[in-house]
Image (cartoon, rainbow, N blue to C red; front, side, top):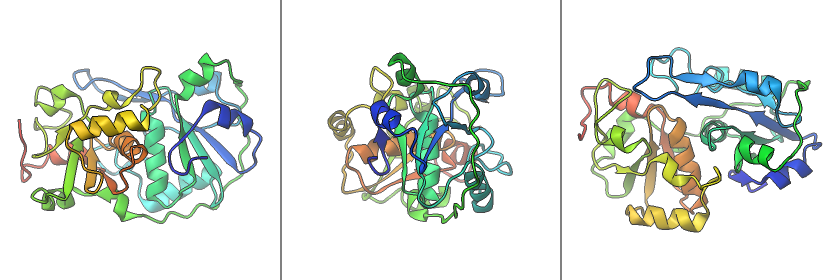
Length: 283
């Protein structure tokens, strides 16, 4: 496993019988902001029909989020997240591989939440479910029996930023903001919050620009070139944001692959900033 980042389908297939491996299926989708709510869905029924052998299912909409936060979907608080991780069999030495059917968006979110809570042995399956199936690799409908784990949630605040922290850093040349929402959201033409626009100084690098044609993450050298085009310096701190932290986690994954070491996610993202009249916006 490449610590904290990606694994290939071949790597995963060769290790499916590893007792220390936990494969997580976190398939789902998001509806456009212009559609009538609800906008967020899991694909549990698809998992019941077929999944990678041994894969447990995680509902990205409810299980790893904070049900008491109206913004949806900031990460679940420590006790809730710890109970969730133990329930799916994660312990200190468990190697976790997450996959989805959304070009890595939800798998990256699980990756970030586990990193945030102190679990370093986690990676995303590059190419996800689509690549696994396209290559004819094994699938099953069997629901795995999973023993409880002993995961302990230890928040690492270096990986997370609040709205107040982002606001305090707006004038700093050493902090760069990356908005991975769509150009229409960035430009103020649509919004999942009450207000429209973007955070002052943020560069817009939409998440699809980080995705290769086959649904995997673009190679590191391509990502470095893309980030350089947007004036990103790998010596600076970079904070990613989207609407609620999910796509922002994918942005962090891409930045890490490109060699950026000081990266954090604004977990409340635009649903926090765009609904707070005290914070400045650019339209």
